[in-house]
Length: 294
Length: 294
Image 1 (spheres, rainbow over the protein chains, first blue to last red):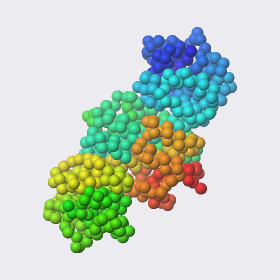
Image 2: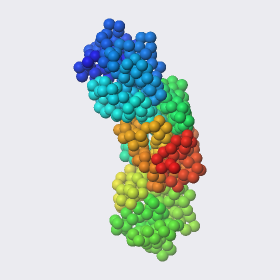
Image 3: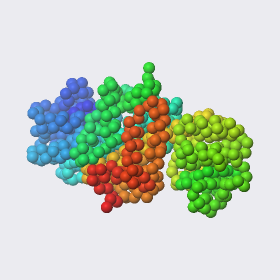
Image 4: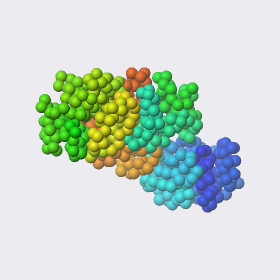
């Protein structure tokens, strides 16, 4: 089966490689030549005017604007799908935007699966992502072989686009707040002279634990902020959450506070570092040293 | 061994019963006659002027002021300990206050174990609490048989009072923020028309999960806010965290935001309900219905 792939970033490249391993004929593109070269080295082919039409187009770009351009822009990839082909939209976007893309696809005789992804780059490369998916039965049918190669878990959340992006937003709301709470907790623990490794040992078996605490606190203890997932993800993703909430007339004070803190950390020059560095952002305001501080 | 027990509330009564089951001769007191009657029904004896002196005094009251009064006030129980006896202080207090109690105890020839508890009323009744403990070796030695009967896990955190209360504050910081994040997430999910039971299913296997999310979201789904742990715990406990942080010159924006939200929920009449009801507090501002709303 021929699959087109738009976006070969840290998530997309791993997903495209998973498709190649599963035997798909994958044609991909990315603005960064180094990403395209890595994709070609894994057996992928460059998506261009000469590429054969595809049954499925997977779109793994940064946001709504990039999704719209990649699918339906001047050089949009939707035009290279066969009639009745399926678009799998993986960017974190609002439910309203996902619905809009579904409508655009339908107008062109295509199906659209609202399919945000979760799990991080390592699981993307292993074909073990979690996908929060919503769409028509036809969209699911069209995407199924591709999803099977990329995901360990596909949550089927609804019969039209929207619920996938809504569920992803719920997850990002919690994840973004929890990472910042981890940062406040570690800075607070350091201010009280607690041994941070002991804090992780005790909290991970206590009611205060979270997936993000257990995942990110070890990086604070090691003082290692090489980026797995960058601070700058969060002004984007919590911005989407805040925008959806505002449209619903819903005040979310923790989201607003965490969003302001991520923006402040980014403005302080931490945007490209791993998001666990928010512990340093919190601690620095009080002159408290954490591991790795000089 | 004779043990004195101050405070027979939802945690204290279960702990005192665990001591009775383990064969200790427990003499207890509480301002509420119903709590004392329940304690006596389990084989406990009323702590009074005629009670024999004890080797250990366990103090499970609400806060620092009650701890000081219960131990060293006009009718304080510290005076009824044998020379070299041990006080086990279980209330959530600041590390500085725990150190002050240790100093007061030492001046009377007594040992003090800084021993905040975690795990909830059900585990207290089962003798399966988690205790975050710090104190001198003598304080640990004196408390050990009592701790063994009340706790499944005793975290030994330091050689003098303070680190136990500091670790408990770290846990409460995270737990309090996570419950409020659960409330924002469930209100947000409802605003997007998501099925809340499905939200729990998906989030519990995703990066957005937390111990508190998994524990409290089912109550929101059931619309059941009968109190296991009341909203009014949090203005107290996050107030302690905020106070400790302020003394350290440390700004914790998420803690400040969550604290303001718990105070608002309490002011809106929700103080005695289960803390999962904060989801309703968030949703109500946008006129969004959750299960149980009429």
